Length: 39
Image (cartoon, rainbow, N blue to C red; front, side, top):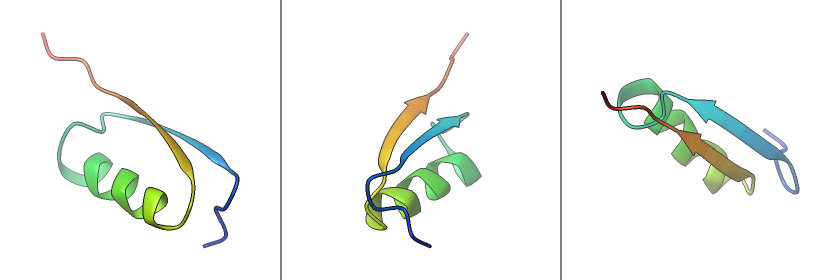
């Protein structure tokens, strides 16, 4: 993917698929905003 200089917002990124997706985007050069809610 071409994510250099892109911003990615990921909800549910504290675990599982969201966490893996966030890490992958960061490796590809994206700026990642992670959102997770624990109640």
